[in-house]
Length: 506
Image (cartoon, rainbow, N blue to C red; front, side, top):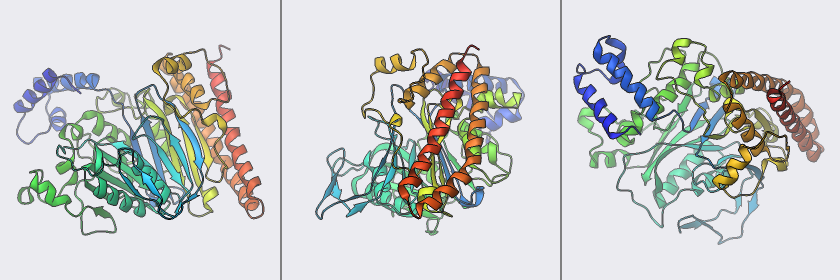
């Protein structure tokens, strides 16, 4: 956050502006001394609040080259961290079983839970990602709210919210409804968050608020939505239940708190009512959302708070297009003016511990149609490796102890001389990131080019691998799973070879 003195300077500058002009618009339209002062303050503010936090993308099925929903997510968290990947099988439970929540509450267990792929960050309450056997994908972005009087029951709910969606939901809509039921029953513990919940047919942004309020909106099939740590749902037609779901008192509660004035606001705006004003106007948040949306938008977008919930893309997006956006940093900007703009923000950073792209195809059996492209460390210095849902499990190298490392242990592993221990994927990729970050920017560009080459090759090999796996599944599921696992292993080994070559002095 900017220091108090800087906040006062910004407030003073706003008072000097002509009425009706926001900070961004004022800088763009005025060439005098106050416009120059505004630019200086924005640049200082940028240094005080670097562009680093989670980022998510939802591509509607009509906006993707595969005709399916695609989800992309960068998970940013302060080191020390470790990321494990595993496949959890479906499970059955006897009548009367219960699920224990982290803070003391409990709820009834269902007779059967679904199998899912799990990105685990031990010790972190809000960082795990999931993809279940129905293609339901769950991840999240922290989105602070203005709520300061939350109502909680039995300690509230936090960590288990997304896990329960992965275990119980067969569709994204079911997942959203479940989130709403659990938030209304227990109350949400954190300030606020947007849960990205998607399946092969639909992608939803589900905004939860500290306490018992929530609202969700479906991403239109032909559009693309992006989230960068502030609520993006603005005007929402609450009677359009095909596309909007919410708790019953979402408007009345905002009115009771003075956050919404029906007479003066011209319709209910969820973000305006519930978002923390600091988060909504933070240049790191709307700057990152704008930096992502401008990659795809068919219409020019101005950098400013309250960007569109979703946009129509210039062309349909593929998984490699989504990877490119998630990999964005200032150095990847081809336009020099954009590289120097204070509004262009990196979408990945040294804090990005893992990233994924979920390819949720429905035109083939789920074991083959659902692909979880995993990137360990920051995408700007790393590689996406594909894992089909039909694998028996992730390689052992993608799993370690489910304990968050100490700072000393983390630093020792990532700062050690680079090696090629194939049995420790997270440490291997994180060690490589450390070496590249310590070199000139041209090295990151070299990594990006090599990563994009390997990912294009992996995508090109997909059809043949999947056709062979589909034929095998009819008679021998074990051999089909082995084929898919070998495909993933081959891509992984190619990435390791590329890392070694890039760092080789010869």
